[in-house]
Image (cartoon, rainbow, N blue to C red; front, side, top):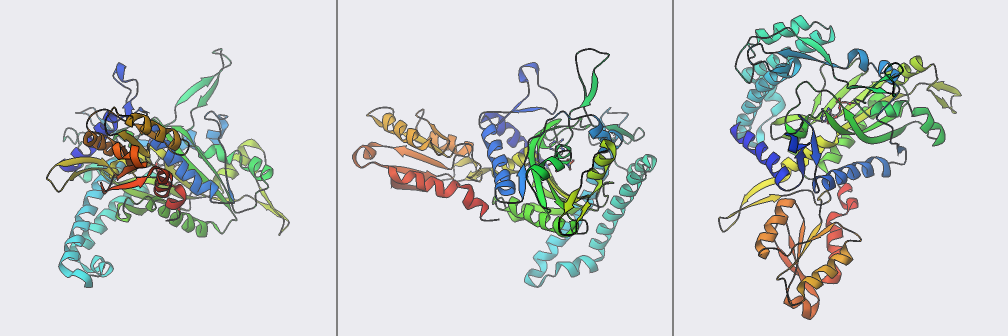
Amino acid sequence: MAKQDDLFKNVVSHAKEYGFIFPSSEIYDGLSAVYDYAQNGVELKKNIREYWWKAMVQMHENIVGIDASIFMHPTTWKASGHVDAFSDPLIDNKDSKKRYRADVLIEDYAEKINIKAQKEIEKAKGRFGEVFNEQEFVTTNERVKGYLEQKNAILQRMARSLENDDLADVKALIEELGIACPESGSKNWTEVRQFNLMFATKLGASADTAMDLYLRPETAQGIFVNFLNVQKTGRMKIPFGIAQTGKAFRNEIVARQFIFRMREFEQMEMQFFVKPGEEIKWYEYWKETRLNWHKSLGLGAENYRFHDHEKLAHYANAAADIEFNFPFGFKELEGIHSRTDFDLKAHEEFSGKKLQFFDNDTNSSYVPYVVETSVGLDRMFLAVFSKALQEETLEDGSTRTVLRLPSVLAPTKAAVLPLIKRDGLPEVAKEIIEELKWDFNVSYDEKDAVGRRYRRQDALGTPFCITVDHQTLEDKTVTIRHRDSMQQDRVAITELKNIISNEVAMRNWLMRM
Ligand code: GAP
């Protein structure tokens, strides 16, 4: 645990030190769970957004994008159920005065039991080697069976209680499990209460006429209310999708873990409209497709897993998370939900307008079903950044900090370094920059010894360093150093564009999907 905490602290401090993420309004001591993306962070974030957009919109003929407003008519949130039901069950510890999400306390407890089971499975894997049959072991080993049954029983009871709005039983469960406040160790809890997560604001100048509004807590509703506009103007045929990226706001009770849970964050969502009855087929398709998108970034397949929901939201008939192995363990990265026709039907009812698709083949109209994919851009950033950050011991015993970002996402693709600051080398380096900057983000660095400059670029995640030396003046060649292998090759300046392009082109990365 201490090791995990250290790793996470490194992630937060590296993000600040190297200009990726700053606390918001830091000169005023910051604002809780609000962060600013700095000069390198904004590039990484933009590249992740673009990688998603290309995969979802550009590569799918039947998916188009929109950019809806953050403010929406307030009835939107009545129809979507957010006014009545978008709340978290919270509980306070009377001694530490700390506030927690009751469901998260229980889930963390259940996860600890799950980890015990997984440890037993790992041990057995080691013992039995290649002949190990995990499925058989999990169903026959009494200890593992016990752990998994215990975990499932806890989660099922919690799901039932939350579904029935039986908050007293949620508290009873916390007490029965002996869950203590992680801060103080105390078990002195208040009752569990529901807390609405939407931020309210007002539209209009005068207090009498101002209209109550909410900052959108998800981007999805901007897609639903535009369903018919897009379908008709884009002449879209079912199945088709509408994608969008943008800010969402939630007054999170427990906002912590850096950019994992923020109050202002960005989502990348896609609603896929399908024929009723075909939603589970498409739900499976999108589960698979989205997992493959994540895996294409090469952060390690073992760092992803599905978590099928025990408790389904009132609008869903199937739901799963793609969880990622963050520095603090496996947590939700993306949600894939089969949302039935709940949203479109609710908007039909509240607006009095028909939101239906006319099927020419059958000469009839229907309200489509929806499969949603929804991933947090900031969470994606944290996933990529935390996995990429590595401390390496080199052959000579020295260490280096390297940010092994997937090069397609790296903020700067190449740094051009004159070996020394004279003899015309800076001028040649700048000429190379002038040429490369049409295609890539590149930077120039002449300060300090070249070894230190390499390390600085390693820590920024720059995939290539191009060094201009005296030989360059004679034969127009440079050395190109690869961030991960540290290998250096002598190449012609005219080859640089191709070498970099081969490594960073989105096409090459997306083809791995
Ligand atoms: N439209 C469905 C929806 O909003 P969600 O599971 O509440 O579903 C989707 O959110 C994704 O948005 C999550 O998987 C997560 O990546 C991201 N997300 C949600 N709340 C967040 C927060 N407070 N901070 C950062 N990301 C968040």
